[in-house]
Image 1 (tube, protein in one colour):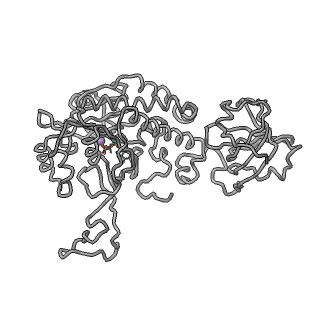
Image 2: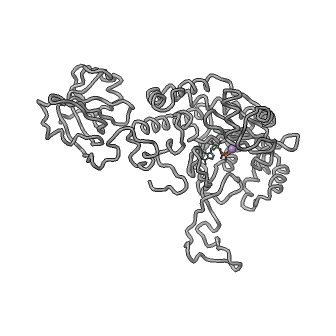
Image 3: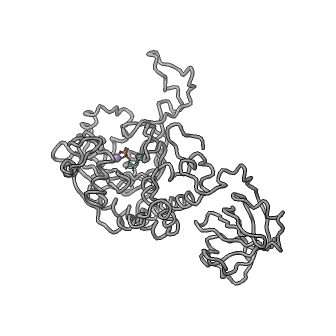
Length: 467
Ligand code: ATP
Ligand code: MN
């Protein structure tokens, strides 16, 4: 092997290195191998692009024996001349001169030996599926979206605020929690009443993984002005749907002095920015997924960037649903929590664009949402998307200490551990707003995938914690 710098496949394919018989060095995994008695063609992928680089092995230079370990999944180091390609499908290829095999992948054992596995099959092979075209594309898009999110908020002067993953508060009511404890499962210490004695637990009280960073986010916003969180959240809900995970990532901006309109404007600008960023930076990957799974994907993404989102109240939304003549699995009437079928009817059938639904009945929303003058609706806003349903949930927050306490009492929420949250309303309270975007729902939308388990490397759902 010569002493030359490695190139990424993406650089070679995109012409960063001129194809003038220059010797290049690549490393990657074999996707396919084909050929005849005179020459063998190997498609090598190193994760930098959906595209492979073709490597040509002339059999007068390499023996059968030398090439034998080159099977799908094997890892190689190759040096050779970068030349314009003779064949169709690629502009350049490498005429191999040197070969080193890092690791073989026995074709009888390697699970991804064949192409065209179902997504269900690949879910069982989550430890290897990043090596497939589909998951490579999804994971590169996921990265780009995460980057776009930080870009967006950083450009707007928002601070990335880190909220704790272990918390002692469960008044969000956003879902069942995973407990965090170091007490022995068997023979946990008991109080005189016979309950588990959490005063002897690690934190001296019952603790759990967070379901949302919002409450702590509000502490950040009422000091720094505008903040956002971006971290994992955990919900022990037993929802086996294509849109729920037990461990998912959430982005939660929280802004002092924003009312619900400012909040809606931000949500719309934010989500359009992310989708546009992906369209600009992940063209090859999006086109690949569109071709494989969803030929309307690119149009749908462009449409979302161009259209103004419809804004209407929950009450107006219910009227439209009632008058639709549509048969829904869950019947519609004022007061119900909208199901995904209702949300998607409004977005996909009625308006044919994203919808921001506001002013929900207070009974179906969280205690911290600002009460409207009518006394029965709150200043909530859900952003509803085609194919997804709810992608963002947010609200203007109740800034009045008295009204907030009343909402807490009405719901009989135990607030003894929440004194620190109430202090935001006791000292220098301000109007403020925020929302939560489920990161995987955004990735789901941008990739056109159908199941949320296919847009995170290692999905957590009931009964699944293998890898
Ligand atoms: P849903 O009604 O869809 O279960 P939610 O109203 O319980 O969602 P929120 O508590 O409002 O969700 O959370 C904010 C955002 O987080 C949602 O708009 C959604 O994008 C996302 N989200 C909520 N629960 C999950 C989950 N289990 N898996 C993945 N994303 C989720
Ligand atoms: Mn919600």
